[in-house]
View (cartoon, one colour):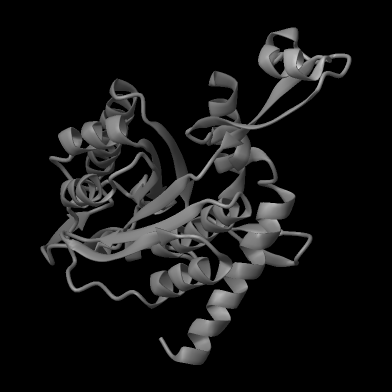
Length: 302
């Protein structure tokens, strides 16, 4: 990607996601991702309506008037986006690939985080850890993360979620909020996911495309596995073949849902399908609505 084109894409994503942070995500992120606890800020004079349980009796005795303790939330959160950069995430039948959606979602989460003075980090993986950017604060850092996402070119095609989660478990010494963005076309990562969810607040973002959910009746076609390169002919005109494909898709979906439920992992599904944004007169993927829905469900639970 040329430098000028990259800058335009970064700028476009910044404009879109900043607007979403202000208009759509306002308050949602802060309300659902809490800090480490609360810390004492000051003792102030009692006012009608204050909880009598917060009275500081030592200060009250010294000052001769009732004083209450005031606390503030100690946030200092760290948000890490772990993004699947494998070949299967380069797929998309519309104007966007799954990787495009992941880049915009990282920007949305990043700007939401820095608005709350939290740190943001990035890990991109295939069947190995391709890139890790340690968490930092500030708009410049988030823009650098977006640029890295857009400029990223994988050195491998495969997927190894296990290796990515094990790497995060090693390098992240303190509890973080980890967004795992992947199509989850992989196996053998269940144990690492359980460990990561115990150590951190893990949220799974399942990336998909509508044509992965169904097989079109297009006759005999040649298909290729994007990650392994394996090729074969498939008779999509055969109703039994299409039915078998739907069965396997549903089986994988159900297994993934059971895994998330077993380990109490929150998840959200995002599709590459675009919608018309009337206010901006452009087509874009609506990934904010399902994300806000997830945040509100979490908030109610908490």
